[in-house]
Length: 124
Image: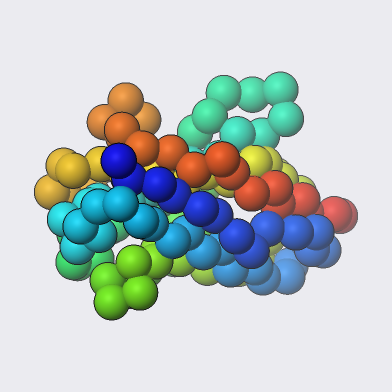
C-alpha cells in the first residue's frame, strides 16, 4: 500500500513562492506517476500537475502553466511542486496523488493513492 505525506504548505503573499514536497512509502516510487491536485474552498478538487515515472513527461493545468513546476527525485521517493508568482486564486488544500499508470495523467480517477493534503493560503 502506497502512503503519501505532503509538506511545505503555509501562508504567503501574492507574488511570492512556495515549494511543496510529497514523500512516498510502501511502493516502488520509480514506477509511480505522481500528481498534484488542489481543492479551493467550496470547490471541487482540480488537477494541478503530473509527472510520469522518470519525470520526462509532465502535464500542467492551464491556470498554473509557466508559474508552477513539478519535479521528482526518485532516489528520495519525493515529488515537488514549485509554485511561483502565486495569487490568491492559488489558495487551496493541495493533495499529492500516485498511480501506477506509466505516463503523466491529469485525470483524477486514474489516481489510486492520495495524501491528506497541505494547506496553501495566498494573501493579496
